[in-house]
Image (tube, rainbow, N blue to C red; front, side, top):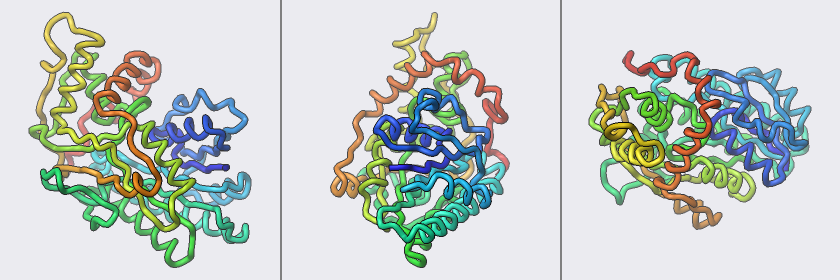
Length: 349
């Protein structure tokens, strides 16, 4: 299968690119190479005859038309997006332009290509989204997001992703475009850009800096190892039912404080401080505006229909992630110089 993967130089996209090539798929990586992208993420597959790279912006319809005609993909996996909630609070315009207008351009380009090819039955447009579109959950382990949960986005980021989800469904219902959708919980793992919580904690800990936790640390997230997510995404694009959405979760709920304490314990073991614990660096900071209390995915549909389930616990995945950052300073060190990294964002509300 030839896959056109947007955002393939980003965190989740690059995991999909690496796994897809390992499984013998042809991959066209379409990425604008904005601040969070890094071609080093796919360096180990860049010389493969199965790999091609196109630097383009999904807001550029002319470029998209050329790429589709040149490469003639069998399926699209659309991951390109602005994704950092704090940045969406400070600058929502970029999220509207990329996540909404960019997705519209992708849908229209894909639809024109699909029609020109004679509407091949096997073509798929796989839209990758987030559980944040569903809003916030109460602290009740029996209540989780399902594919039928009503949308209730609370941030500019989640609102832009909710809008893009609705566009994808509309293009299926109105034009017949064969789509599948997925909504995932919080990802973590190797190559995670150093503005997100887990890499921030790891790198601040190693640098002897405060480990910032919003509010009182009671916010709960369901953590999904990125390589498990990539496996699920490829399964959905290959075997998911057209018009169907699938929630992908790690079934690993932790409060932010519990998560940070686990990271500190792993670091204490792998790279002990001269004195004390990394947990001594934990610092509580003013909460993010509109900070959702809890996310939790019920992944029953993808488990029952497609046979997928996560392969690692959060403790196992975090240990692998910490070790990766310890071993790959040459990857993350240059990224810390990029704009906004290491700064507190999302406080303009």
